[in-house]
Image 1 (cartoon, rainbow, N blue to C red):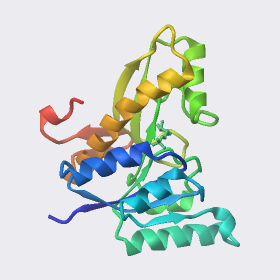
Image 2: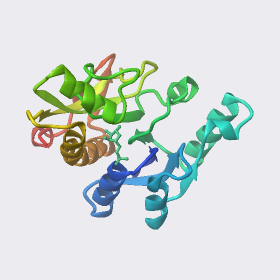
Image 3: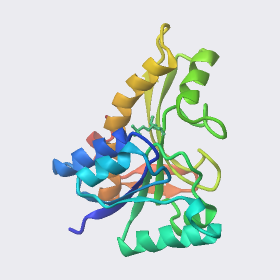
Image 4: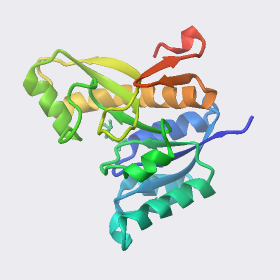
Length: 215
Ligand code: GRF
């Protein structure tokens, strides 16, 4: 069976990239990370990828005269590497609409809250956890969703709840959330490799064996 090919887009540390890479390496997931792309030249994720012999690229719109040139460049790379899915893992830049049009329901994002709450403009990084704590909700969680043209809005693939503790700080909550992110994201990547996700409008359904749904 041909491996499903992934490109990971990340801006920082890359712990989600690593959790996916490790599950692929251990043979649990029949996929391949074809490349890592970062908008940030100094992102630790680029070094992590290179150490794992994965082609790693710094790509920023500022390197191109026109925004269209940037999209064409990324799109040519994804085609050359025969990428099936793009995985956003802590990617701090908006994906250009032209790229979303080329990859409908093929770009996946992980968000550290239960969408549609605490998502959209301004909800990124530690700000998400801060807002969750300030609003006093008792549950937050991990959301994996396809990317559409509206920020944090596309079809939801999976959600997993995480309790907010009374003494949580944004840092402690983010740390606990990461443990779940590292379990959930590789699992969903596995679903995509097996073609277990169907999309109809904003709703997705899981078509794999029932036992595979649980975390
Ligand atoms: C994660 O919390 C993810 O949910 C958010 O950005 C963070 C990325 O962490 N979108 P890492 O770079 O994968 O360690």
